[in-house]
Amino acid sequence: MGQRRGWEGAVLKLLRARDFVLTVTDVEEVSPLYRRLRVADGGLLAATGVHPTMWVRLWFADAGRPHQRAYTLVAPDPVTGTFALEFALHEGCASDWARGARPGDTIEATVQGTDFEEPAPAPSHLFAVVDPAALPALNSLLGALGSAPATIWFEGDPAGLPCAIDPVRHELRPVPRLDDGAHLVERVKAELPDLLRDEPDPYVWITCDTTTTRTLAAHVRKELNVPRRRVHALGYWRAAPVPATVGGPAGE
Image (tube, rainbow, N blue to C red; front, side):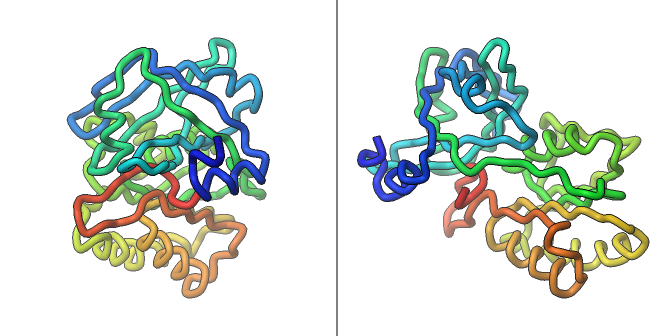
């Protein structure tokens, strides 16, 4: 199986990754650009267990070559062996597959590298910078952190999307995507320092496109002096000259 998947598959095999076959059982059109697929897990949850923000690698065919992207599990149910996958639809082989998926279709999945370590001490305030590709992970994170207040910069329009944001505890700050993420970077750099000033134990979660994520993570760590252990930063997709392919945690 690793040979068919090229060098990425070979490396994962050496790392003792576990492979499963998922079967689509239901399809929901959340919006014209957001689709949810319910799947039977092929024994995955029983074998691996479940943790917050858990993700799997899905394997797609891209012009005859294997292509993997990571997706967060949504509402995993170990009893029934099912969970959902949510796709922010753009250009690319992953979105193409999701658009055409129907009950009975199958896709190969690999589990390797996913984990979650709840920050200690518990966050006095969560500061999250996300976009639609990271929405499933954000929802899972908010559930895991329970009563912690949060400020969320959301690049794009969250209207109609399945957000687990509680207006009583969470402040949502929508930001339009302009200049390949530069506008989001400017907003966060301008607003975050004052918000951090009086927080004893902040936790910063940055999961946007790779370039934006790296820029903001460096700023938060080096300029704002937030300790590395209090910052989670992971690029969820890579910007492209054409409309971006949104697939999940890039490089996971």
